[in-house]
Image 1: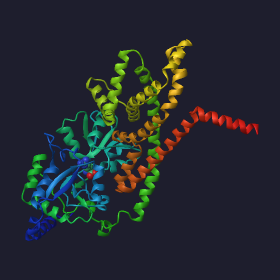
Image 2: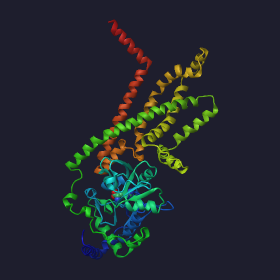
Image 3: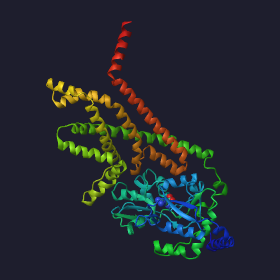
Image 4: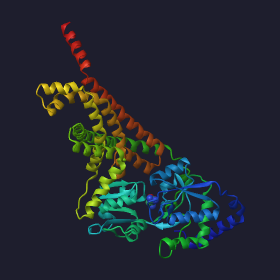
Length: 516
Ligand code: ARG
């Protein structure tokens, strides 16, 4: 740790330099927006303001105060946490403040301001859990984390643990409340705020802090604004604004902050200058892609196949109901179709996975769904609504005369449907069914939000540890393309196989061959 007097000396030095060159600061144009990224579901650091019009929190106030100090027109942009570093790398953000821990790995791809907050990771468990007391007790357990965070990185180190990653820590904590995981590893101030201030019930924090971390404002690598932001930070530390903001969000005295985060001490400047795309980095991205994308692709295919299977069965019944003569059945099914076609699949997934267990808990029933059945149910219900219309169209496209002919032969409606109409209709619905299958392959990426490690999520996880967004997402897109191309070939083949004209041609060709 650097001694305090040394820190104060440096602060004083920087302050004098900057005060001397003050015109430089006032020359900063107020009008050019300074785009600052944040993931705003991390209270009390960043969260939506009460009236919903903007953002509030410790980070938000701090960044505004620094902006005021140095004349930057700060404008916040909300985005997923794992998207922040890629956005800084591409220059679509000028900075990011998001409770982001200064780590050596991140320091190789982005620049950091001096630390502005001291935090650490804590373990949260269900209130009635007495078996988990520290980090060692997490071996082999199910742990929920926010994707791309230091909590996720620490959890990954636990032997045999099953780490499930969510887009926000709120969802990870909800998972713990619903009893689907044993613990959540997350920044202590945020978990404590959720329990004490936001009224999260049934959860407690156990043991000591797992790590000591310092938050910093992240900037694009080589950004010339680092000095400016540090100057602003030192100014607000000196003039008491920092203390006021700290008091507003946390009771008590702020920690003394080091000038440089300990995690960066010992990393040489050549380390920082390392091109993120050097050979060893490239190799590790490649090996991660080779290792993880096939796993993800298999999960995606299994999900799609199960959902289309159950969806098709459900859709067939719905389609029969839609052409039935019973107005009650017809209307109920119409409502079903309209609901599932008219609401986003993501919302349906959240209702099934997070909403229903919460509802049942509210009425005293302890019921929840596992990730896989929840995903298959949500996807099947949705796809059934679309397929039902396709199948109904297929059935109605068959000449009405065939129904009458069957009736004349003494067949009932069900027999007619099964023996005569459906075999023909099925052939007709094959092309749109193929389309639905391809759409579903792509839509399965939505279940990543419930922590399902399908293809897209595997890609996100690789980006979270390598920060190579472009290469990884291109690779993910190519794997999707392979899956969809293979499926469209499979459906073409099936169409050919089921085409009576082509079948007859094949038969006569083979007969001719036998004759000669
Ligand atoms: N401090 C942790 C990290 O840097 C978690 C930050 C999460 N921030 C957020 N706004 N969700 O990895």
